[in-house]
Image (cartoon, rainbow, N blue to C red):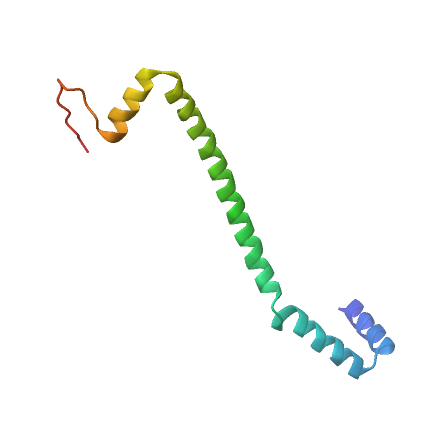
Length: 100
């Protein structure tokens, strides 16, 4: 507490009260009132971290989709399996029962 008093006395000895008021008003305008406030900065940081998480999710999704595509391109049995699972296709001589 005593150190704060020393700092306050030092600042008052260097600046007049008008100068300190002007500096305080300038800081309030810069950090609270303007478009780029501290609060906006924190919200932008949260949005950036959320978007980075989405980027990582989609990169992993792209990799898994590439692997599935390579499997489909490589083997006819995989294409048939894919069509049966996703599009409920069947052969002419069989019956398919869908259970959900």
